[in-house]
Amino acid sequence: MRDVDVLVIGGGAAGIGAARTLADAGVDVLLIEADARLGGRARTEHIAGMALDIGAGWLHSAEHNPWVELAALHGFAIDRTLPRWREQWRQLGFSKAEQKAAAKAFGDFEARLRLDPPPGDRAGAALPPGTSWSSWIDTISGFVNGTATTKLSIADYLAYDDAATETDWRVPAGYGALVTALAAGLRTALATPVTALDRSGTRLTIETPRGTLSAGSAILTISTDVLARGAISLTGHDEILHAAAALPLGLADKLFLAIGQGEDELEPNAHLLGDPRNAITGTYTLRPFGRPVIECMFGGEGAREMAERGLQGAADFAVEELCALLGGQWRRRLTLLAGSAWSRETHILGGYSHALPGRADARAVLSTPIDPRIRFAGEACSRTEFSTVHGAYKSGVAAARALIG
Image (tube, rainbow, N blue to C red):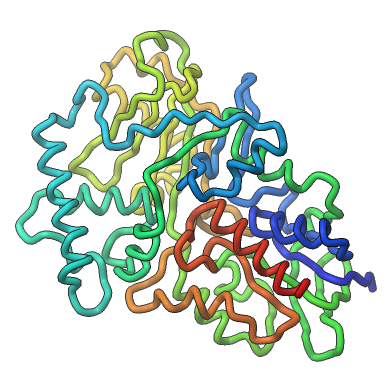
């Protein structure tokens, strides 16, 4: 049995932040990860000389995002070009009048959430009656929250919205690459899933397929879906597991399509929404960083549908949506480069968390230890910055500092 002072379980942004904080404080710490790589849902793939973030890609709320400073410390440049999600390039398939009407419907929806929230804490109940833009609002919710408004807590949604800013930046060398750079020099064990944690003794006993570990303390940073499904046996933590079940992962996936020819016909960093009247649609960033690619994102029910189709099927769908807007000649110009299917990642099982109606309090439950030796961290533990890499990182740092004392 191998002994360690603190074991950090899960090598995403929260786990790396926790392990880095502990190691820098001189604590004997081991970071173990079930996958064969670090980074979690922050993953950069290097293809055709490009760093492609198939997971998290935006430094949201840059004014208070610690990754901005960490990028500077680790020699990563920041691109401060703001996203253009609220624009439809050349009004293709979505006229200015339609955009104005849709924006008004969304404004009415948010106003009701704040000023006249319906009973039951279910965001979908606040959709404006008689509007033709309810499907569009659910599409936007899919991109932002990973789920439709019917499954979304009003209190949870507003907690995030009140804390967030409109400043979102990117890392040309890859957000995922930046996250994993922070793990340099840490003692790690990859491809080591934890199956059980026993707290009955004076030290914690942790079981893995590669052997048993003994630790004085542990920080668990695994996803809520993995926790809720009982992938790790955790005696005496029923309240934590129930909280995790109330914070399920929504779905958000990406594709990158290579542009074979005609890239100069597309404006760099411009944005298109595939079909504003269909919940099964993609959002497309044309030539991010000026590169010869189109970045596609699907959220909520759209992501669920694309996961069923598989990467090539999803790419075919995206190409057809783009051809409907740009012209049929693009069918021969676009090919699949890379993509994600987070719901099929065994050790993750989804995108990012949302609170079910009436369960926004579950985030506080998840982050409150039952045993002082065992802490939980991750984006779902953040009460206002969930679903973000910086929220995950901050929670990991906070858990580590709590153990240091």
